[in-house]
Amino acid sequence: MAFFGKSLTQMQEDALLIQQLKNKEERALSLLYDKYSGALYTMILKIVKDEGVAQDVLQETFITIWDKSDQYNHSKGRFYTWAYRIAKNKVLNLIRKREILIQKDDLSVYKIEDEPKKTDEDITKLKGAILKLEKHHQKALELVYFQGLTHREAYKEMDVPLGTFKSYIQQALKQLRQIYGKAIIVLILISQ
Image 1 (cartoon, helix red, strand yellow):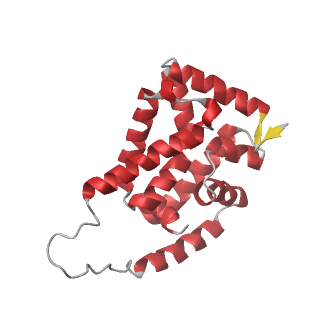
Image 2 (tube, rainbow, N blue to C red):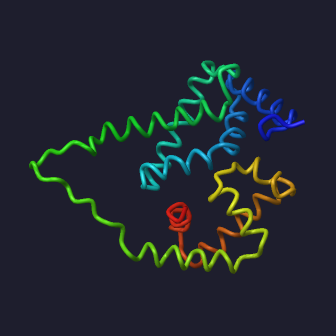
Image 3 (cartoon, one colour):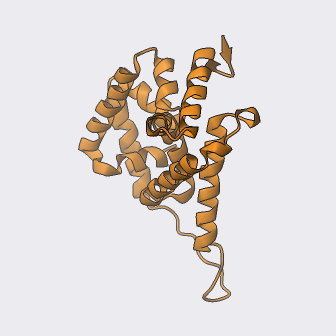
């Protein structure tokens, strides 16, 4: 039986992990990180557009989840929704602190520069490189990076064991890194 796309077993596993998190069991935090960090990171990076800053915000998000785990109430919503709100608030606070929108120097309007044209070329090249991957690697990348599913959601979608799914992601990224280096994740996220 599924409840909004989640089986009863998944919901029970989540409830157990969340209870363990509230009991300050580090293993639970690690498993929840594995499950939700990809989707949260994607949202954060789309807003801040800086991989280093996005990683910092993601880390701060999970520190807050750890510190405030006792405040999570399953009757008020899903754990992911609660974690998403924490991440979104961290991003918004960061933007406010940066005072990006406040004009300081003069009364003219700041010119927003277009992204370099090279980005379009890179995205085209990336899509071509992805199409050269084996079909199961393509599907794994699509589910995690383009559809925003967590690894635990995506492996079930592909109907393979979790370890196998994670190896698909690792193998695909390794192949793409040979072409792009460490910038591959940024290119994947920009192309969404």
